[in-house]
Length: 71
Image 1 (cartoon, rainbow, N blue to C red):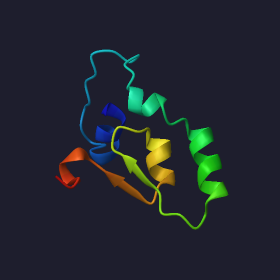
Image 2 (image 1 turned 180 degrees about the vertical axis):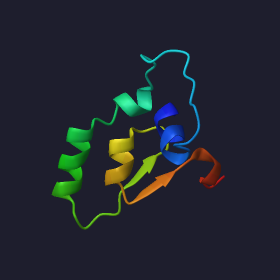
Image 3 (image 1 turned 45 degrees about the vertical axis):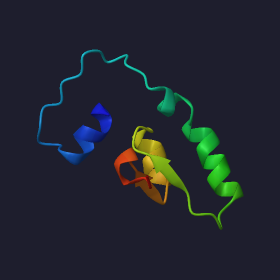
Image 4 (image 1 turned 120 degrees about the horizontal axis):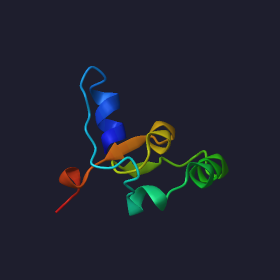
């Protein structure tokens, strides 16, 4: 999330407890596999979760958070 925070607020200092922090949602969607999926399905609208990497979010059509999911 630090990566996203820096993109949204480039003028701010973003503090992270460790630079090696990982998120299972991010690790579960490698950009090379995601790009291959998007290329194989150009007719699909692709939605990703906010905890994915900046590269994945840039390739997606929509980025969502759990707060906008239907209850």
